Length: 247
Ligand SMILES: Nc1ncnc2c1ncn2[C@@H]1O[C@H](COP(=O)(O)OP(=O)(O)OP(=O)(O)O)[C@@H](O)[C@H]1O
Ligand SMILES: [Mg+2]
Image 1 (cartoon, rainbow, N blue to C red):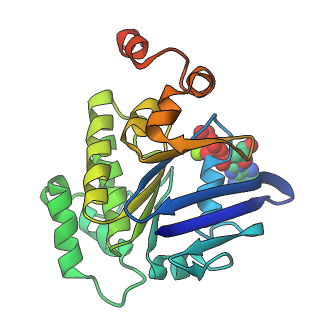
Image 2 (cartoon, rainbow, N blue to C red; image 1 turned 135 degrees about the vertical axis):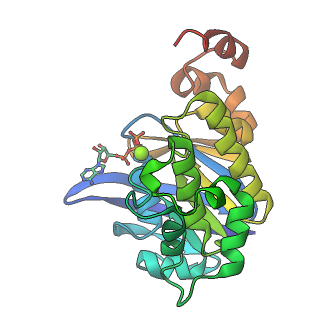
């Protein structure tokens, strides 16, 4: 079943059109990954879907409802949550306060969901009274995801969850995303760690210059020579893993 359908989205900032008709679908229970060069419009697409910037044309449907002109809080109420690429935690609030903020659209903090988030991220429970700015980069990313999960979303949008993290933490974040997905939340993520992300995704989209360039299963995109050459740094997976020691 199609959970999210973003069809021919045109959007941008001021009078600069950045997305020239981008289409992205997510089915229930899927992990879908958006890749593409810097400035391609990946974050802009997320923002347009989540109602942070207006769609000038096209339509966004979530769970059968037209949400094209909805505000982010209305969209959150319908079951979609969003983790931005930057500044995704409140640094001077504690971990627990950050998680409580995640439930701001509800009239009370859902204790059961809070406990589920702590089960998912035991480190957050351990550090619940520490300020967010005392966390490591990886822990902060877990907190940002945990905060979004406080509304028990059907779809989680995550913009570059692994950015700036050491390789073993990248795997840990992706493992968490898998386990969030296994517990029933569909995932739409943007990633620079394109090979790793595609290898875990059901499907992927390549955006370039505000347009769809490729879309297929994660596996097929990884196997596509043109995609590998243009967007995955070329070569096969084996060559990449041999060269990762260098940088
Ligand atoms: N707030 C903004 N105001 C004006 N232009 C913006 C704004 N945010 C992004 N842009 C422009 O929109 C284009 C797409 O940016 P976007 O952040 O969506 O790219 P991206 O694919 O997420 O790139 P990255 O991989 O670097 O995160 C870029 O040309 C960027 O300069
Ligand atoms: Mg971005």
